[in-house]
Image (cartoon, rainbow, N blue to C red; front, side, top):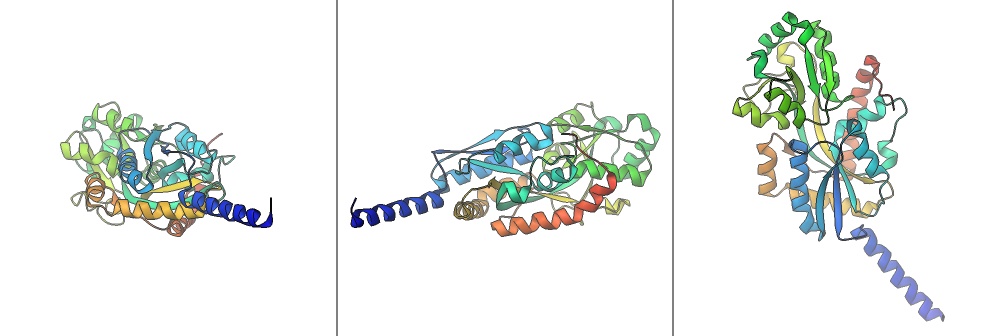
Amino acid sequence: MDRRNFIAGCAALSLTAKAGEAIGQAGPLTKIIFPFAAGGGGDALCRVVAQHLGPSLDRSVIVENRTGGDGLIGIKSVKGAAPDGSTILITTGPTMYLLPMTEVTPSFDTARDFVPVSLLARFEFAVVASPAINATDFGQFVAWLKANPGKATFGVPSSGTIPHFTGSKLAEVLGVSMTRVSYRGSPPIVNDLVGGHLPFGITTVADAIAQHRAGSLRILAVSGAARSPFLPDVPTLKENGIDLVADGWYGMWLPAGSSSGFAKQLSEAVAAALAKAEAKEKFLSIGLTPVGTTPEGLTQELAANTAFWQPIVKATGYKITN
């Protein structure tokens, strides 16, 4: 090969590499992995994002619910995926900073094993009661807990999560013994609450708001610093004497090694999707506040939450056995 052809070949390779970095994918299909069950607010969020992201990326985007291991199975599947843009992780922020704190031997390091893309939406947690316990407000709920110490079983979407530690705080402040049951996401908790098989649970407002509005269960308190704009008549935990403010959010990540150019392109596509009136309306209808950030914004959010929760989690002594 002569020098001129060699230089032309190198230029072509360079352009191909840059195009690959911008597109960041190996085929016509991208999977969004959501590590919790279908049917809840987080699952709905993923499907709205997939619907609006596909045209922006000029490819099909599907959602796969890969449950189990308190979110670890889905998260680890993305950790081990090829960094070619064909696999995206959407999960709650807390899973990405609490699981590394609570595993005896951490399965992943968020900063090392994933590339940040965007914070997607914020949400609040709620204490939710089944109609079976006949509590219409938080005071009646506390009275029921103290009168039924052997029946104080509550569900959480998974162990080692904010609902888990919120339950621990409730038990401590109220001076009652409570038994925690870990589910694979929020939808089965809501089903058991509505069916009267579980007295109460701690889950997201987004996952319980439709049933609360329908009267099939009751949200007794929310975890934010102020009352939720979606539930202005429901008091906060702090209003009920529980000194805890806890909110959550959903974020998007790629496997480590993914192109930073593709992460930026993806974050811009997400921001455009979340700005659409149809997407905003859907998010707000299920108790989610759409956000959309740069990759750097997601990194900063993760760092702030890690610093806040680390001493709280450490004080409980809780660990997940791998």
